[in-house]
Structure formats: C-alpha cells, structure tokens
Amino acid sequence: ETGVTQSPTHLIKTRGQQVTLRCSSQSGHNTVSWYQQALGQGPQFIFQYYREEENGRGNFPPRFSGLQFPNYSSELNVNALELDDSALYLCASSTGTGYDYEQYFGPGTRLTVT
Amino acid sequence: GQQVMQIPQYQHVQEGEDFTTYCNSSTTLSNIQWYKQRPGGHPVFLIQLVKSGEVKKQKRLTFQFGEAKKNSSLHITATQTTDVGTYFCAGSFVMRFGAGTRLTVKP
Image 1 (tube, rainbow over the protein chains, first blue to last red):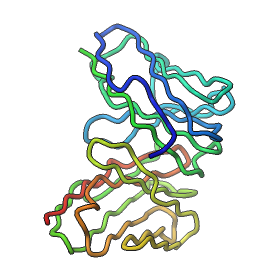
Image 2 (cartoon, one colour; image 1 turned 135 degrees about the vertical axis):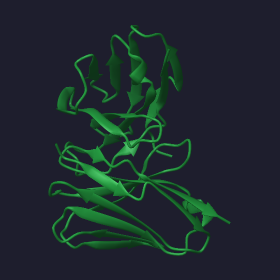
Image 3 (cartoon, each protein chain N blue to C red; image 1 turned 90 degrees about the vertical axis):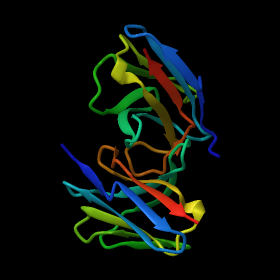
C-alpha cells in the first residue's frame, strides 16, 4: 500500500451542491495530481499541484478547483455538481513535477451525485 | 489533442496462456508509464519506459517502447489468477491514461 490517504471514502451529494475532497501525500512527495475515473474508464487528469501552485490542468471546467497546503496535502473542490461528476476521484503524489515520475495513488473517493 | 488508445478493451484467457496489451499515441511521447488496477482498487505503478526501443522485464511481464516512441506493449507470459485487473498505459506530456485493458483469467 502507498502512503497516500484520501477522505472521505464515499460521498453522496445532490446536483447543484458543492463538495471538497481531501488527499494526504506520501511522505517526501511534493507534487499532487488529481484524477477523475468514471466506471470502466481510465483516470482523466484534472490538475497537478506543486509547492501550492497549479502546475498543469486537464480539460475540466473552472468549477473544478484545488489547493495544496504547505505540508503538501491537497483538496479538490467541485462546485455546482452535475450528475456526470459521479465517479471515483483519485489523487496521486510524486517526488517531482511533470509526468516523468512514478505516481503513487490513494484509494480514491467514490462520489455519487443524485 | 493528444490521444492514447489501448487495445484490446477486454481479454479473457485461460490460466497459463500469454497476454498482450497495446498502447498507441497520436503524438510522440517523452515517456510512457504502465499501471495495474485490481478490481475495486486504485492504479499501482508498474514501470516507466523512456528510451526509444526500450525493453524492460519484470519476472513474467515484458514492457516495450516503440522506436518512434508512439506505441508500447505489455506482454505477460503464462498468466496467473493474480494477474487479473485492468492494465493502463499513461503517456506524457499531459498525463493521459488509456482506457485500459481488462484482463480476466480462468483457472
């Protein structure tokens, strides 16, 4: 198992609500990436944070936002939830920026939007 | 935009048979990573390939990066039930995952 933790494990929200998901990086890792994984699909890159700054973003609307804290933990915020936001949200930490480093994934948060 | 395609989508094999999954990119990649996700689990890093034509082995798993750095393959020799899961390739420059190949193994 990796040292990456995520909370909560499961979450049920109503369309239009807002949600915050949390991720604690593996010790020594300064970069966190967030992914959305729909059922039966591969993870889709949302964004990456390095030293509290966004370091890259995938094709997700601005209602997906994030934060990274000085201890390298991170949050993913999603506003105005839509039914299609129902998915497994994964965070992954690594020791460097970009995509040349092994990523350690957390167990994920299963979000259901009704 | 950059696309990473994986084939096949599903593969069902008898235990002991070989298995291969292929990953193709529409653009040249600086590197490619392979991950395995067990049912109900999260992706776990297997390997990274960086050099053109690179071949790496991990026990029964053989990974190859194409000469043009636009395709890659993962080959498993003599599959075991512990190999069950979905295998993803992920290509830079933006970390794009393929849709994965789901492997099931019949004992």
